[in-house]
Length: 216
Image 1: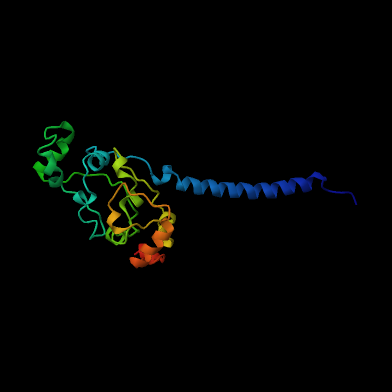
Image 2: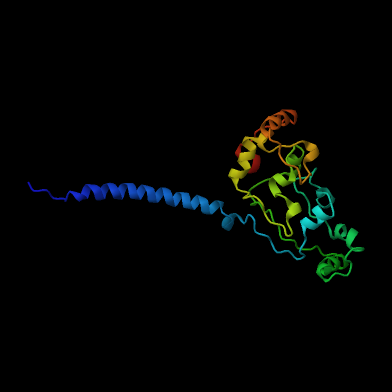
């Protein structure tokens, strides 16, 4: 009986099978990389605001502590957006007639809040408690980055679940002394893991990774 298929058919079959497998794996890798990219997460993208508020100026140049504006960060789930009166504590005296600050003065006159654009915006199905984190030694810059170097505020991290779980599974990599939580210039020591393990034990931090921790 004569051979039906050419000898090259075996080679073509192997090439098709392995080529298809590599193509599928490559497509999966590309999809994962895209979902982690700033194109999807908006990480590193400065948001346009009604007033171009500069954390770099207010934090680094003026030396304002995070808690002066974000008053509820130590006792509430939300860090809090400062009311217009907080801004005007200074700006009735400093740059009081600046055209750039007219929306702030108008807000004070009309008692209508400024509609700030949320930068670190978690999905509605994710629960996050600021006080639970800062009171356990998680610093502001761990999540928000060096805000003292941001002329305009942007989202520093991806805010994806894998990023959250990295800390929840191994908090010793990120936790710092409670006295340094609001120190934007704090840097992890070379022996961070060793010191972190001590703080995890001292602060009674538990590695909470169940779904209900964040999805309530």
